[in-house]
Structures are given as C-alpha cells and as structure tokens.
Length: 346
Image 1 (cartoon, rainbow, N blue to C red):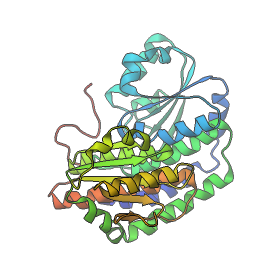
Image 2 (image 1 turned 120 degrees about the vertical axis):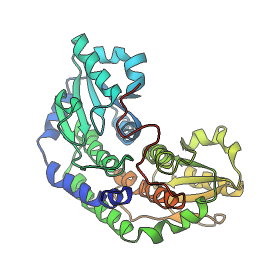
Image 3 (image 1 turned 45 degrees about the vertical axis):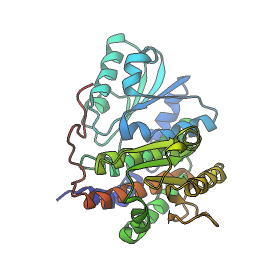
C-alpha cells in the first residue's frame, strides 16, 4: 500500500533514476541553445512546484541572468503581459493539469504569443507537457497527496536546468547527485532516531515558523506547506530577514521555530537568529550546521554534500517531523479535507 512515509523513503531511488535518465542528456544542450534566444526568463508554478523554483531563481541571478519568479495564479491575472512576450517560460507542475496551468496554456495559445515553454512534470502524458517545447519529467511515480519525492525530484531537475541555461552544467554536477542520494539514504535508514530530538521540541507547540535564507528559502516555505497539509498545524515559512521584521513578536514556549543553518554566505546570520529565538523562549530546531554555545535546542545534522543540492536533504526534516506528528494526531497523511493533490478550481 502506498503511504506518505513510503514516498519519503523512495526519494534516494528517484534521484538515482533521474541521474540514469538525464546524465549528459541532449536536452540540456537544447535548453542552453533555446535560452540564448530569449532575454526574459519566467519561472512559474503553484504550491510545492513554485517553492522548488527558488534555488534556480537565485542561481540565475548569481550568474547575471535576470529572471521573474511568479506564482501561476498571479501571472495569469496580473502579469499576463509576460505571456505575450518572447520569453523562456519554465512551468513546473507535478500533474500538469491544475487549473492555473491550464489557463497559462490557454492564454499563450489564444494570444499567438511566442514563449518557449519548458515544463517540469511527473510524467509526460499531461496538458502541460504536451504543449511544451521541451519536457522534463521527474518519473517519481504515484504519490499520496503531499509532495515528497516529486518535490525533491523537481529540485534536482531544476538544479540541472539552471546550469544548462547559464552554460555551466558540468560532469561534477552529475557526480554530486549520487552523493546526495547516498546522504539521503543514510538519514532515512535511521530516520526515527534522527528526527526524535526535533519531534520532542516541536510536539507541544501550536504554531511553527520555518526560517531559511537564499536557496534554503525553498525548504522553509515548503516545510511550512507540508506541516499544514499533513499535520494541519499552523505553520509558515519565512526568510531570515522577514522573520526579524515583526514575526519575532510571536515567540513564546508555544511557538516552534525550525531554522535552516545552511553552510554558505548567510550561515552566521542564520545561526545568530537561531540563538536569539532560543533566548526569547521559542522552541528551537536547527537543521544544518551545528551552533556551538547555543541555548538548549534540537539539532538535525546531515552529511556534507554539494551546496547546490542541500535543499534535497534539508526538507527531510519537515517531511519526517510531519510523519511523526500526524501519527500522534491520528491523521492519515495525504488525505485532504478541503483541497486535493490537483486543484481544479480557482
């Protein structure tokens, strides 16, 4: 029987399957060539698919390539002028059939505009993929309602896509995937022990803030989405700067805070924020780099991997924490009450 937890445990195999299919694939050369013909790049999706685009958005900017990152729902109603331009349009949707994605295809076809569409979906047999110039497929297979293996599979494909657009995709980018698959596997083999300290810290809270910077913003935002979907626990993702600008007033022993202390240029900022949260009474969990001399808190370490692929490991914390908390509450992860895996109503 397919379950939420089983989907989480399948993630290393999905990453390796993608590596086998897309390693040195000619589609990357096609993407690089296509991108040279368009000055505007638009990245869009909804939910987990939108969140997964953050690392690629930041990467393109770091390469001097401007890109627009906008939710599909806002693109079709308030920024649809972008769809009438010659642009490279990257559309991410697990199903390829959600209502906003259908509207994008309709707008493009009705206007006779010339966006070059690159799609990222789970399988190639859907409306979006069939109306794209180039298709990327996670091949993650069937999944319960909450995005787990489709999300991390999308992160990997988008990592390669960003490098292909910039002409920077190198052999070591493939080698790094086996390392992150192995790291993920090592965590998942002993997942109950790995997640226990975080579970003890968060289980009594009534609200959870997840905080990350740069590429780890995807982990914060999608981690919040997971806790809402799986546990029905009020949770919200923030950038580190945004959390300091007001939401810190929420801090109390009833508030859990998961801070992604990701190695890199903003590590010190994230660690200082984590210490400030613990000093002000928040129930602190850090995921990433250990903080020395910090107030008592829970910490989830992960093996060292290529920095570009860290979000694939970071999200294991919220995924597994949600599994543990939902068990406490007698919930079946993936059983939506009011929504669904594919949204057909605006």
